[in-house]
Amino acid sequence: MATLEKLTRLSEPSIQGAQAVRKIFGEAEELLRQSKEDHRRICETHPRLAFLIADSQTQLKAKEQQASDLRQEMAAIVALLQNREVVEKEFCSPHVPDSEVGKVQKHTLHDHIDQDAVDMLDARVDECLTQLRAISTVSSEKCALALRKIDAIAIPAAEDISVTWEGVEAIGRLVGESQDAVDEIAQDLESMDHHCDQLRDTIRDLELEGGVLSLDDYNVLLHDTNEISGIVADLDEVLTAVRRRADEINVRYLQYSAFFDESKRRFAAVAQIAEISKEYVQDVADGQTQYGSLVSAVDVVLEDMWGLATWYRQFHSAYDGLITEVHRRRQAQRELLGIVEDVRARLDALHTEELRLRAAFVDREGPFLPSDLCPFIQDPPPRFTVEEAGDAAQFASVQSHETRYSKIASTMGADSHS
Image 1 (spheres, rainbow, N blue to C red):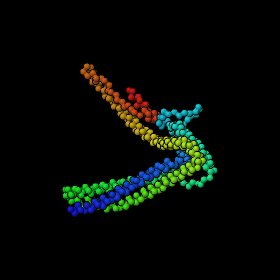
Image 2: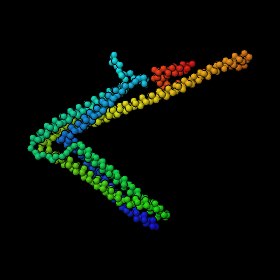
Image 3: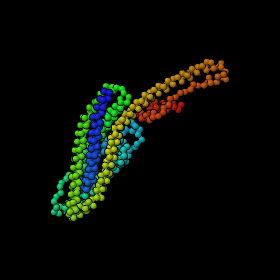
Image 4: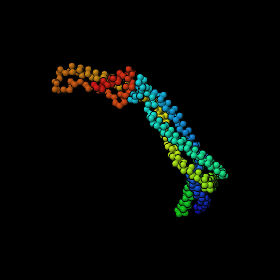
């Protein structure tokens, strides 16, 4: 009964701790939901405000810089492949590089890549960036014209607000941090519920079946129970951080929303400004949609180019491994050819000796033996040969410039047909 009372006392703070964590988890989940909703609304509002500060120019410059960096990387890799010559006698490569009349073209690793694919992707990037520049230029000109018309109208300046995509991404990162925090709370809640279930099951088993809980098991439950207050305190700090992020996101959303609503009210109050803004939004709406599609297309092409660049660099590295492997196989072939040469010599010596012994027997005893008594006694001994299979011929041709291994290769060919 003493053990049962101790476990019962442990269960009370465990249940209270689980309830506290469940409350923290519920509030954190709600804050995360609100943060995600604010982030979604900010993403919807941003394109309609971006024209006020021409944020698309920043995005275009970033894509141009990415394309420039990738081109430099690709040019360096292509030059590396162009300068790496392939020696045909090393690999017996069937590839014959194109050559101009009267010139001998070096065979390089570059001959084995699809340069047309590289050029095509590069041209596609150029095409997309050119269209993006055209759309950005037209949009900027229309924006400048609209702003000049608005500036000509006497109206108080609107409250300034930073409308940048970097700010939207920063809010997205805050949402991600809150998501991680909520996941952490959920995990601790699951652990605490599991601890409470363990206590309930242990108490129930002791009440129904009796018995004594071991000291080690009790100490484990006691240790877990003592940890609850610390866990709850830590999760309170996590919840505080979630609240802070949620408040920051919500304030930002309210700023965006208030700025956008105020802009709409101002445009509605002044018919001329509203008409100018309406015309601008209509003029750039299609361009903005096309702009977003082109940015996505650039990202896809750049990703493909990075994939090619990575593959070509690995191709260059793999070529070193190929050289090592060919030389390893050549050495192995030489060792095998040496063994074959020795075996052939031994077979020839044994065959010659057997011929001599059979001839000596026939000469000595043959005249006294009837021919129908043992007809096969006059037969010559069988001749055994060693033949090659697989890639031996390839490596033999590779080594044809070496006298010793050329001789071995020719001997093997002659014996195989005997």
